[in-house]
Length: 357
Image 1 (cartoon, one colour):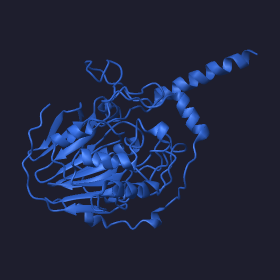
Image 2 (image 1 turned 120 degrees about the vertical axis):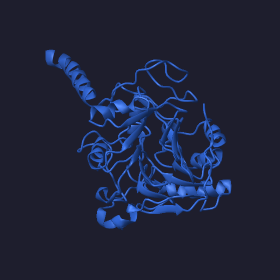
Image 3 (image 1 turned 180 degrees about the vertical axis):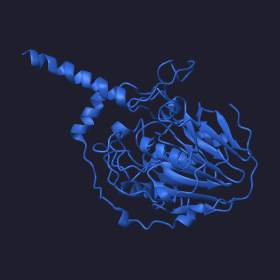
Image 4 (image 1 turned 180 degrees about the horizontal axis):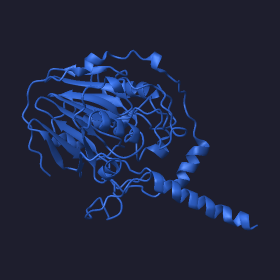
């Protein structure tokens, strides 16, 4: 009987130990309209689902078909392809939310993950079903890394530590996320609040913009650090990286503030809608974001790599095609790329807008 009574206590202690190991450091700062001193709040005040809903989904979910692809299934581009450092714009899809952006002489990575699982552990958690489209060893010298938030599929400890060792880039993060990087020996960081900007060089400015999501790496650190998207203004192009987000009213404001040439917008991890709608866009909403931000072109991301939701591996592409048809878009307006494939163009020079608060 004593042991039966002790089991819940031992389990709780074990939970605390694990949480202490994996949770991220909390942000500490002044309160504002979207930070109550302890937690961050979404622009439209929407919240992600709680434990009871997670349990309900785990019992009732019906995942679509996924297929495991291997290194031999991908035609990797030659390493020399990525050594160019010129003024043209090139955006190469690695997969999930990882892109290599090459613009105005800079090599920039978004939410890099090269690990086999999106997890704090190598033996459990969502498994990578498609290999990254660029071998880590083939990356060009990386200057900047943009991190949208601290979830495991967007901030992978193993990958960022390898990037520090191989390239020592500048890491740009939302509020509080820099402390996690600092804990792991990465000191070259810049922490941005929504609507703040940072000049990477005299021609390139990165702006942090709102997103509708949440944060947390453990059980008790939910929403203790910020999440965001980024607008990258270069001398010749403006690129919007939406990060991980649900649909919200704030996208029209982003479109009014910036003249966006190309957007990188999530189209996966959206089923079931009753559970995912507050945190992830579906392809229909992704097209609405494309229209709201008035993007000239958009590329779909955050699909087909890690099985994070109930839709099958190929469903996001199919549903994106249906959404394009619904809104009268051409296939060249909003499209997806295969791993290792680049979108390139030689844009006309443009003058950076003065955005401010």
